[in-house]
Length: 250
Image: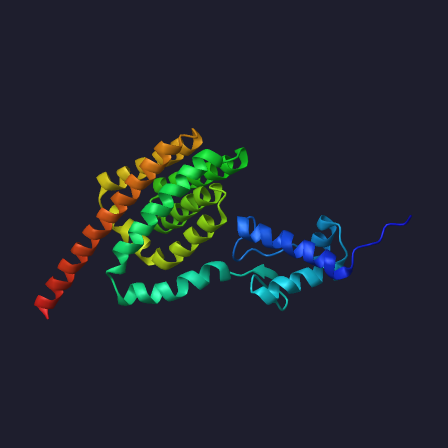
């Protein structure tokens, strides 16, 4: 008896769920471009009409965006829906910075713990690559590279937690506080002892995750955020003093 082929929309539903899962787990990240229609159809062993239908389903959800002449890319909707209002609120209400750091303390500590428990060999390779890039940035004294690789290192750990919400919430959080992270790293870079302390903290986080030492990973990650919080508070005081000095001159 000849098997009945699934309806076109049934195939499209299965493919849409597969692509959606890749977005949720971070295999496909905001800004990533999907392979060409021909390549992806061959990879998934489906027809191109079925693939188009699947892609359209995710476009309608706002997870994918088809650009004229630019292919199909993953949107940042899962992150932007959280971060956009908070960016404005943080600028207007500086006291929220403390709340944000408390949230980061909780989120990153749990992410590091879960990463130490769950990270696969592939995850560890990715974290190691991110850590190596971070160390190279430190050595180059390129502050922009330090900021980018710092964010990538922590994102790799968040993704290795294998908790989709943690991975996407961490990305959202970085969108919210990217400017504050940049200012803080500039501040720390001007203080060699604290800059070296920051490097040591990242090394401790990486080593504890690599060793699958969950409690240690949580502890050193939270100590890192406490250090960041203290340095950000000090940076804010320095900026207040500078502004006060400028006002006296005016």
